[in-house]
Image 1 (cartoon, rainbow, N blue to C red):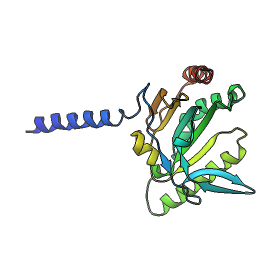
Image 2 (cartoon, rainbow, N blue to C red):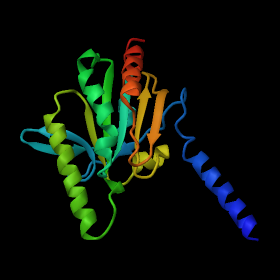
Image 3 (cartoon, rainbow, N blue to C red):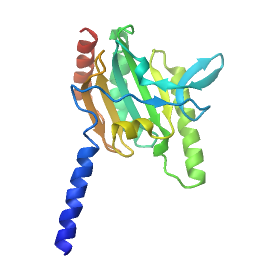
Image 4 (cartoon, rainbow, N blue to C red):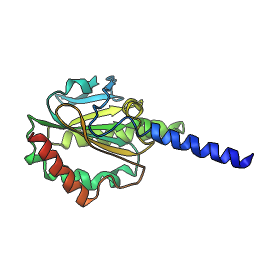
Length: 204
C-alpha cells in the first residue's frame, strides 16, 4: 500500500511539472495577459510630472516588435539571480533599435510571504525599490507590477522564481528560461548568447 502511494505521488508530481512547463514553448505564441492598474499596487508604471501613476497593462498592445519579458519575483534572492543578465541588457541597450524592440519587466509582488505585517511592509519596500529603478532607468523599458500573479498563473511559471522570455515580432517564443528561486537566470556566456539572439531577432 505504501509503495502504491509513493508511485501515485511521483506520477502526480510528474504530471504537475509537465503542466507547469507546457504553456511556453519555443515557436508557439505566448498567451496574452492583462494586468489592471491600481495605485501603488499593480499595472504599468508611468511618469506623470513628479508622480508615478499605475495604468492598465496589456500584452496585446505590443505588436510588430521583438520583446524581452523579464518576470521577476519580489524576493531577496532575485537581485543576485538576475544581476548578470541585467548588466548585459543595460550594456547592450544602445545596440537595440527601440522602434523594433522593447524590454518588459514584470515584478510579481504576490510572491512575498504573508505574515500579517511582513506581507504589507515587504510589498511596500519591493514596490518602492522598483519605482526607484523605474525613475533611474534611461531606456524605453516597460515596468509592470503584478500583485495577483496574473502573468505567473497564465504562463505557469515556477513559484518564487524568475523567468525570461524572448518573443519575435509575431509574439512567437524564440527563447524561454524559468529559473527556480535562487538560481542564476543566465550566466555570462548565456547572457551574451541571449543578447546576440535578440539582435538577430530585431534584425529580421
